[in-house]
Image (cartoon, rainbow, N blue to C red; front, side, top):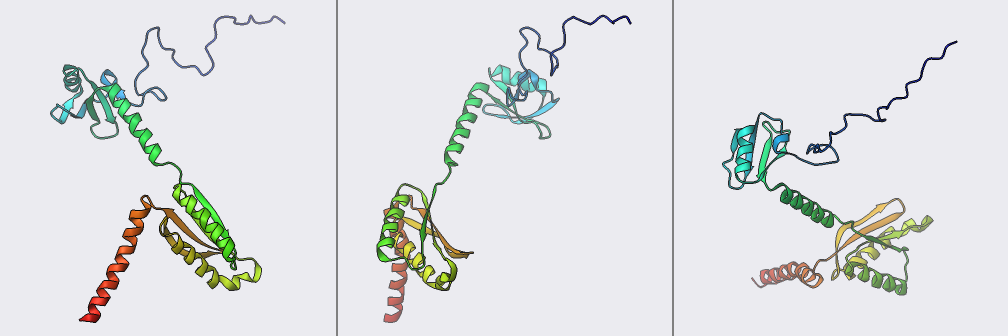
Length: 225
């Protein structure tokens, strides 16, 4: 049986697609290359123009490109899904730098909050309590949240009122360093509170005490009347 000749010529690369011609620039806006479409690559027939030193409004795309070129700036499509698309006249490289800077600042602000846990028993002795209170002060000073809980083992759940008193005492002893985010909550075998650190401990602790002082003064004034 005669064998068919095999094709030995150049093969198309796997995952083909059109290869860029030599010297061809990648189109801005392509995925993983450029986040925005700019200048001659904008395909809309008309756009809404915004930016400094330009008269905002809707322009034919050629007119919008000319306005940007006259100012020696770029035409950047910032809202492609709007009708018509919104384009800003701006220095594109400066625009990208500002976007990256803003994103970096947002990530810094969204840093994860560290939560430290402190566990008590319903009948914690005074020495153990003071030891854990000291640790909690250190955690709040360093900017961490403190999650304190009383764990009830077996029949110790009968002492849940005692556990609640312990947690409220703990929150009160920490009022100069943190604020109570929620009252004691019983979930299963745990009764929990969460303390958040004060940004300015002395100032916020003073402000927290002032309303109670003013209320006492008002009551004293009422009694005198």
